[in-house]
Image (cartoon, helix red, strand yellow):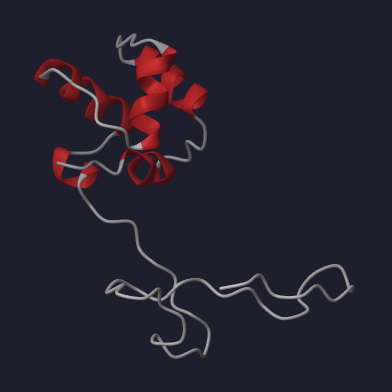
Amino acid sequence: MKWNLRWAAAKRDIWRPTQLQAAFREVGFTPSLSKVAALWSGKPVTVRLEDLDMICAALQCTVADLMEAEPVAAAEGRAESEQRAVGESGPARPIPRPGGGSGSRRPLPPN
């Protein structure tokens, strides 16, 4: 099972693992920073059911919220089939906007 802890944390305006660790401390849950970083990065981590309850209490969410997929922003006026890796069946890759930087034109990265 893959959790989307960052999406649940973002809904609570938590944007860094250290902020997440502070939210855990508020509910009396004190995992190590390495465990918090592993949870944040989406790496497989063993979590006890009691700890899962504490995670949900800190993020004010349910286990179902942790499994909710992060919404993908719709491409602005671009067809979804524009750029896909060979054999890829997921959503289209993000495409950099041409010339949308500091004024100097940079070439697009190679595919």
